[in-house]
Image (cartoon, rainbow over all chains, first blue to last red; front, side, top):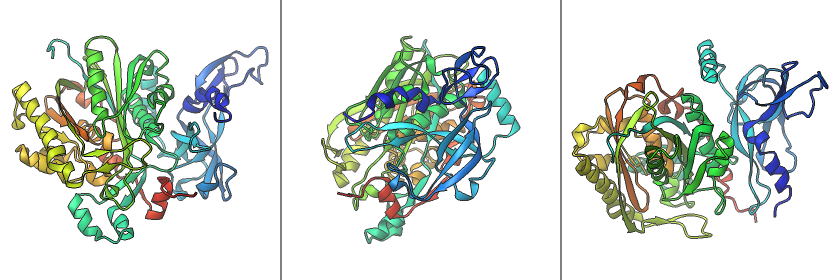
Amino acid sequence: MSDGLALNWRRIPERYAMKGNHCTNCKQDYFPSRMICPNCRRKGHLVSKDMPRIGKIVSYTKVMVGPSGFENEGNYYLALIDLGSGAKVLSQIVDSDEQDIHIGASVKKMFRKIGEVEEKGAITYGYKFKVVKPLTEDQVEALKEKNKK
Amino acid sequence: MSEKQKAGIVAYGVYIPRLRITVEEIARVWEKDGKHVSAGLGLKEKAVGASDEDSATIAVEASRRAIEDFGITAQKIGAIYVGSESHPYAVKPTATIVSDALQAGPEVMAADLEFACKAGTAGVQMCLGLVKSKMIEYGLSIGADTAQGKPGDALEFTAASGGAAIIIGDKENEIIATIDHTCSYTTDTPDFWRRQHAEYPEHGGRFTGEPAYFRHVIGATKLMFKQTNTKAEDYDYVVFHQPNGKFPVQAANMLGIEFKKIEQGLITPYIGNTYSGSSMIGLCSVLDVVKPGQRILVTSYGSGAGSDSFSLTVTENAGKRKADVPVREMVNEKSYIDYALYVKHRGKINRG
């Protein structure tokens, strides 16, 4: 049996759907989920919320020597991504041209393998982000319409 | 099939990995004439899944597009079938990964299917049956593959990565194209296989043509003509399974179908053979451009061997319900890699 099987399984909602939470009192999003809202404390009321698929790069770095598990990845980019409503996430950037990776760039969540420790072990999946063209106003409106439904 | 109860495609999504390798680059390594091989196969390059992509990630991305672009509520999906010949696990379903990623479960039927390149269309037939019998509201069938060709083998030039997801439903205001009829043509023909523990599939070379691909594709299509009392002229678009850029064109010729009817659905010349995704991606490309009232004929092919044929009629919803990015545009988002990076990404390097 692979190590961390139960731990990885427990994280599936967080990794697959980016399930975080939202404080209905201060309107702040949290990802990963928090047990209590650090702003509102006992007055806070946290509800489950899926983070949006689209975010913006706040800061990024190029990793030249990857840590254990990333030795084969070569140079890759890590970015701090603003998901709106206060939540930020640190994630790997994939499928993007080097010149497109910059502060303020729009990124979209993609479903990728995030770990395959040994050939016979369980595969872990999760999120990585890719740079996309920013949404036009029409697309933002259309997205809102769809979300209403 | 009952004429009263209509069901059909309500949403579709395609995912094609970004990486590409050209046929000429593969030919360079094996010291073959790249231009000659490329012309012979009718394709220039193929899509390659990155090292962190597999059939499950492709299936999830294709399904997400179907759900997001067409506003489908994932929780209303009653069945998920993933057809592939490159499921990431030998034992453990891909469909459960898709279900959790879409948050469609846990109240959902799910299974993996395998029938070489036609497992995805077999799933469409299953979903159609379940929707028509009112057992489920929506059925999701996916054809996704990260097809493997043995290094140096003829298949290596075409075996590509990609997939398509098709959602079947019966709501009149959602159906883009009704599936009027489906039939299959199946025989035991060992033209392509992969045994347990074998790394790469084996194939019968020229045997994969006449007694395999052509017999079944032509057989299923003629069966469709007979059962629906239609003929080639009745269809505006035709999609065949496309193991290379040549076979579907030859099949169309044999059936008296003009090239312009298969052109829109002919995607293999740009991305290679995505196996279970192949004919389904072709169909999605057709759905990108269809107009109300037009008729589509699709015949898939899976080695081993069999073909599923579908006759579809485009509804009035076609203009209103479309994918955000058409397949023909999607194939242009690409970045080229050389053979060395290709073998690294596809895990073909034995590191002991």
